[in-house]
Image (cartoon, rainbow, N blue to C red; front, side):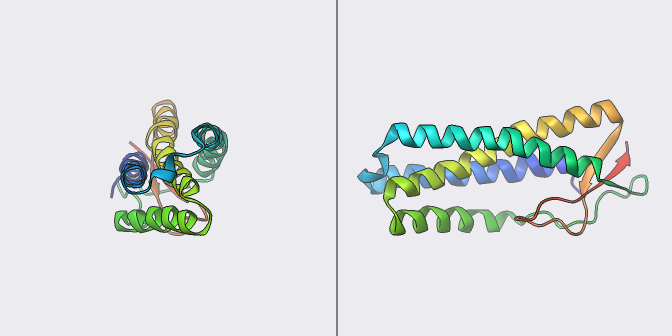
Length: 157
């Protein structure tokens, strides 16, 4: 079973890639998506700060509450299916674009990219640091949900 760090890198990378692709397509298809650039930049900076703070708190909590696994057992939790990420990005981007404005759709797409990059880089490094310090290896366990948070198990490595 893949480690939690591996899943953070892969899922975060796919989410970031989907967000950047959606933003690129918006620029090519809808000129109004690039309006209010400073507002977009400021809002994405807020998303990054929230991920840096709330993401760290949630990850530290999940690691502190991790259940002990049998040595070498790994996790049994289902990872987020990668095929779910592109539709999520598409629905957010198109939904906000159609319902509010295309520059809001751009913010949704870029927000997905920021969240994915934060997951793949900031959160992954937090877990890596804890693993190196503690000697534990973390895995997702049953009960993890895309919107409700991650439950972790841990095993010595």
